[in-house]
Amino acid sequence: MRIGELAARAGTTTRTLRYYESRGLLPARRTGNNHRTYDENDLKLLRQIRTLQDFGFELEETRPFVECLRAGHPEGDSCPASLAVYRRKLDALDALIGELRAVRAVVGEQLERAERARDELAADAAAPGGPEPVCELGGRQR
Image 1 (tube, helix red, strand yellow):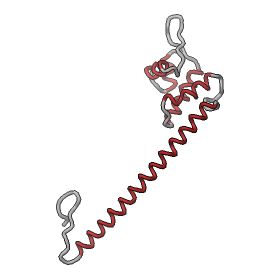
Image 2 (cartoon, one colour; image 1 turned 180 degrees about the vertical axis):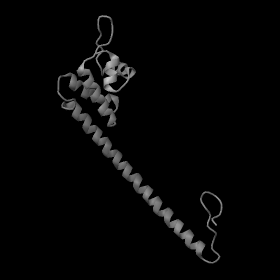
Image 3 (spheres, helix red, strand yellow; image 1 turned 45 degrees about the vertical axis):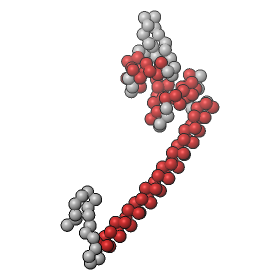
Image 4 (cartoon, one colour; image 1 turned 90 degrees about the vertical axis):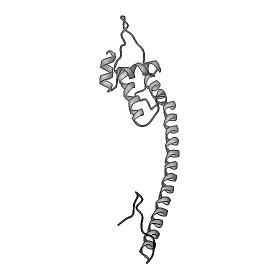
C-alpha cells in the first residue's frame, strides 16, 4: 500500500509516517518509481507505536517494541528489551504517583488551614465590635 492509504488506515498523517521513517521506526521501502510502499506488518508497527504513545510512552521508548515485531514476534512486548521499557515506565509512574500524593497532602493541609482561618474570622466578626468581613474578591460583605 502507498503512504496515504497507510496513514488513513493507521489514523495518522503522511507527515507522521515520514517522521517515523526518518527516526528508523518505519521501514523505508521504495518501488521502482521511488514511491514508498508498505504492508500489513507496517500497519501493525504503527498501531503498536500509537498504543504506547497513548499510554504516555515517548517515541523512542517504542523502539524495542517495534524491533520485537520486526524480528517476527507476534506481539511487540514479548522481547526482553520491551519488558525492560515496561519496568522503567512503571518505576517512573510509581515515582510520579508518590510526588502527586505529597502534593495532595500539602494542598489538603493548606485547605484545612484556610478553613480554620475563615472560621476564626467569622467568629471574630460575630463578636460585638469585631471586624467587618471582607470578601476576598474585594469590597465588604453586606
